[in-house]
Structures are given as C-alpha cells and as structure tokens.
Image (cartoon, rainbow, N blue to C red; front, top):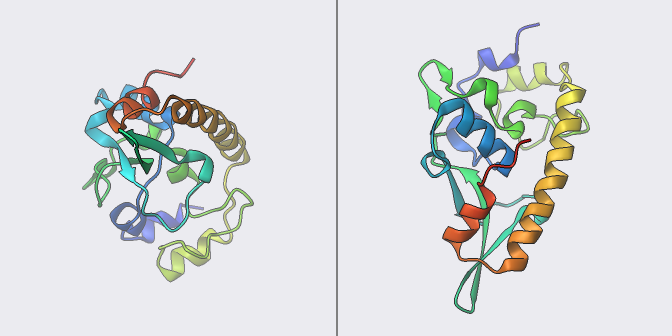
Length: 166
C-alpha cells in the first residue's frame, strides 16, 4: 500500500513545528551538507505539548527562558516542490507522524480526513519506533547535561548540535 501522504497537501510540513533531537540534526547535516544553524534553531517554548525532558533552559544572566530544538520556519525549510529534500535523513518525528509510538494515529494530526483514516490501517515500522525511543532517551540525557551547564541560547545550540553519531 502506498503511503497515505501521497494524497495530502503536506499540512504537517506547512503548519507544524517539527521538533528534533541532536541525532536528527546530525543526520540532516551529513545528508544535506548544511550547517545546523541553516535549518535548525532553539525555538522559544510556545508549544502546547512537547516532551518535558527535551526542554532546553537557556540563560541570559539570571533570567531563564525555555526553548525546544526544532527545524526552522513554517513551512518546513527542508521542504521543496518535489517533497522532503532530506527524506532519507528526515527526523524521526517525521518518520513516525502521525502515529504515536503505540501505533495509534494522533487525534491532533493535521492530515486530511481520507489520509488520516488510511493511516489508521498502516502501523509505523517497529524498528523506527524502537530507534526513536532510544534516541529520545539519549537526547534527554544530552538536554539534562546542557541544562546543568546553564548555557546561553547560542552556547546551548552549539552544545546540542555537536557531532554525536557513532
């Protein structure tokens, strides 16, 4: 069965903040030969839901501001007329969307009705889910260490986007 995404207007790429991990940034950088600052950013935390253990605390003197590592811009900066320019290296959140790790389709998914219904019949690849969970756990540790250091936004971005893939 073809991906239900072929019947979509790419609402997820055009209207959703795409959060990423250090590992996603590294994969995209290697695949695209782009520097992380060209496509990723620490975005001020203004999302209704995100993983609390992915919240990056940035410090400006004694003031703390919470951020999340995300791809730049809406629509997605990596989207082209032909589709995702980094499809093979796309973030795990994109690989799994619109599913939760349980395999259920998210009630908040922005997919049009028919593709959303079709996603209900297609389950995410369990290897992707396991790898996603492993990277999320490792990224949580990286964020914890970053927060422990009480870095500025610029230094926190540097810390989070240094090479980590082995």
